Amino acid sequence: MRLLVTGASGLLGLNLALEASRENEVYGSVNRNLLKNAPFTVIQSDLTQPGSLNQLLAESCPDWVVNCAALANLEACEAQPDLAEKLNIELPEKLAYYVAKGGARLVHISTDAVFDGIRGNYSETDQPNPLSKYAQTKLEGEQAVSAANPEAIIARVNMFGWSLGGRRSLAEWFLNHLSANQEISGFIDVYFCPLLATDLGNLLIEMLAKDLQGLYHVVSRDCSNKFNFGVNLARLFGYDPSLIRPTSLADSELIAERSLNLTLKADKLSKDLGTPPPDLDSCLKRYHNQYLDGFPQAIQGLRS
Image (cartoon, rainbow, N blue to C red; front, side):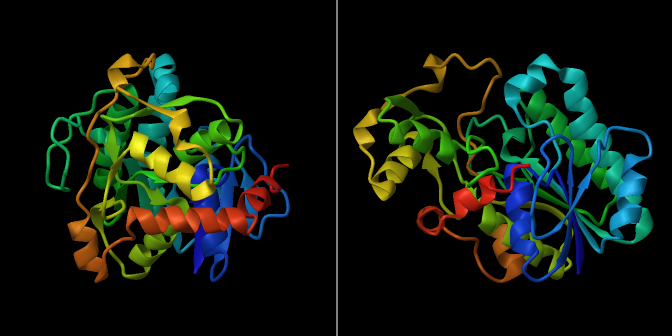
């Protein structure tokens, strides 16, 4: 199949494009972060410019499209609300329309942060209540995509993995400090269900291959608070877990409001795929194996 990945230099976009290129013809759209010697076709395009989406779709002629392009930094969304709306609402809506018009299939990447985190264990039928500008624009992006392309898959996700700059995911943040023997904080009151980015990418491809449609929670089948996530990483990689101090989100200096309990149910996904998503422990072990195999260096070697 011919697959187009927007945001192909980001954490999920790059991991997805690399995984999918093993068995598919992949095109990856990037803006500023160019790639060299990638095993897929790289197209530089500023998707906010008039005509850019039509040109990108005409050049790639995809069967499948996965939209990973977004403004995902919570503080940046608070500081630049107009840009957040353009990238997280307007761009996905236009892309969804053009993809539907061309007869391709679309996956739009959303976030677990659309919920307020008061109770957790959310299903797809629960009512979102976003707390931040980022979460609000991502929810409105979901709604815009659904209206423009009712057959699209909307995937609410959380992930960790190896990124182009080595600083994009929470796991990298922990490891960068632990490897330097630096003390850091881990939230004991923030819960999430992240997947390894490569595992997430493979699940998205499987969902497209099975012709799924609609809203799905695509997360690990078990969850953790961020403190324990960091401690488990430290032990797995042979670092001192006592460097991670347990702390509360309320004690942080983060600007954008964040939800405490973003645990999601993946029952719908498990039923429709016929198998549950990976558990967090197996994701962490594969992450460590990627490290041993030199995967982070290979990814960072793609930087232009």
